Each structure stands twice: as C-alpha cells, then as structure tokens.
Image 1: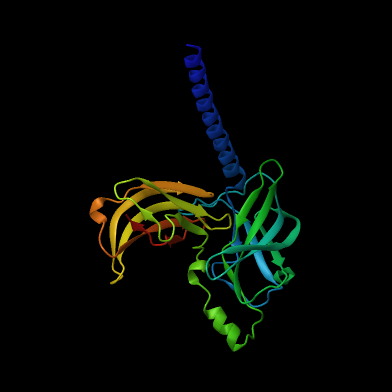
Image 2: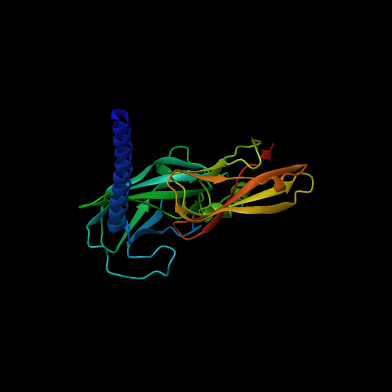
Length: 288
C-alpha cells in the first residue's frame, strides 16, 4: 500500500514538473514575443554584395511584422531598446556557419531604425570573397534581450577583383544566400540499415546560426542505385514545428518498399525566419 501511494506520488510529481516546465517555456516564449516581436535586421538584403569590407551597413528596424503573413505596420514597440552588439559569422560552401568575432559594440538607442557601419576586416585571417551573416544583440531595458539574425550577404576584397576572386565570387552558393543551411537529418546515418515494419527515429539537428527555424514536412524516398531514379514512398510527417536544436520524428518503412539495389533517403522541407522555403536531404540508408 505504501509503495502504491509512493508510486502514485512520484507520478503526480513528475506530471506537475512537466506541466511547470511547459508553463515556464510558455512564459518565456510570451515574453520574447512581447519584447522581440516587431524588430528585425532589415539590412543587408538577401545576397547583397559589399565591395568594401571596412564599410558594411547593418540596419535594425523596430516595426511590427507578422511572420509568414502579410506585413502590417504599427507603432514601434513601446519598450525601450538598445542595440549593443553585432557578431559576424562566415558560411562555407557546405553551409557550415562559423562564429568569427564581435565586430561592433556600443549602445545605439533603437527608436524606429538604427543604422550601423561595421568593419569586417577586424576579423583575423578573413577569407574573401565569402558569404556572411550577422547576429545582432538588442537589449530591452525592462525585459529579455533579443538576438536577431541578418540575411546572408556577400563580401569581396574590393571593387577591382582579379580573375581568380571573380570566379570564386560567381561560385558562391545561391541556396546559402536564401538562408538554406544549418539544418541536417543526422539519423538514419550514411549507410545505416533499418528493419522494415519496425519503427525508428528520424533525427533532425539545427545549428543555432541557421535561418531555417520551422519544419513543415518530411518525405521518404527510395532510389534505384543503378538508374538513380527516385520514388516517393510516403509522407512521413507534415505540420508546422518550431525547432531550436533537435527534433525527432518516428517513421516505419513498409515491407512493400523493399527492393533489390535500392537505397532510401529523406527530403525535409523547412521555412526560414526570412520567409524562404528550403529543402534538406538525408544521407542514403538501406533496409535489412
């Protein structure tokens, strides 16, 4: 009897703990929406090219906008805001974002708009041409601070680049310009074997510097190894799911999908905080 009572108490305690955790997260999300909603890094624009790395303009605007819905203007958020820092990231050809350094520090009061001039040559061993993004830190005097990501932009060493630099510049990835990087289907892994008719986890991982922050669909495909012809097996999941770091989706491959010389892969669709639609693909894997 005592064990039953104790067990019941533990279950109730765990349930209350989860409810409290969910409630706390709701409060945090609500506070961030209140204090950070309506501000955005509006410059640089997508794919904008700067020929002088010492003079890159960053613009932070304090206007209301509705994510994934038609933008509506309103009065600036009444909470006092101050731009306090700008961090620089580089994105390589494989979509790996790397923190470089803090390129601007200060206290710029944000009313309707703040325009900053950033010197990217402060970064040691800066490689140009390249693709970059900024993380802007905005301090709220009476609430949580906000971190805002800029759109991806390009930087050249000068307006008079040589043939090699010009070729490298033209080869920069347009998908990275759109913010389609930093999200990966990490499981099943490359060459992994899963069993048919048995549930397994599809793991999705997001880098903190990624622009894609909302998952919308996951589809399973088979591909003939010889002909390279792909075939949709089924839609594994669809919805609208925010992702900060990790997200798992359960899936099962039916017996009917098993065939000789066949591999499988996933196509993940996501949207970015700048309203771009991106597609990410897993490594090929197999069935037993």
